[in-house]
Length: 179
Image (cartoon, rainbow, N blue to C red; front, side, top):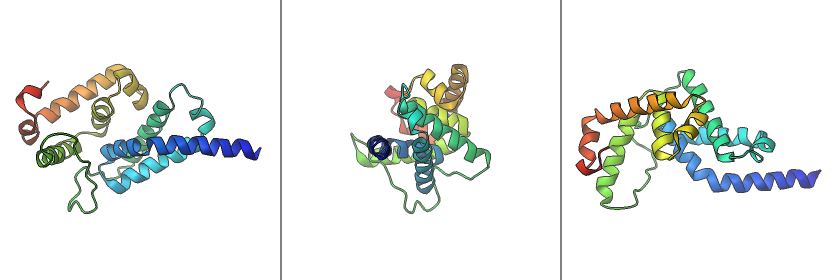
């Protein structure tokens, strides 16, 4: 009996280690605050661990865990917890470095995008983050958000439309890259 629990713990440990940074990034994009992101990622993995017999045997364990994260975030949002994507004073904010090009310009572009994302309603932010940061299909996003594909399309379109109206963000995107 003890061997089964140890095997389960080791399997979960490997899963958690392999996915931690991606879960933390997604959590940060959803909550906008580093400490809240860590709490959300940890709570997500806590739930995944307690249900590991279902998660580990699921067709797509990543999709299962994403759904858990979205549900936890939605519950917190419904409780009216304040979320900030660009906290005042940026103290302790860990910045993700861009991979290519002029690093200073990319950092400025990222800050502009995070501030713009902070202005979106939670469901639109979830749809945009899952579709464009996580690069999920509409079907995968709908599954993660617990809604229809049409709702994902609507929330994504509305979110992108609002982002396009942000003047600072429009200036940050080169003309050739606009969709």
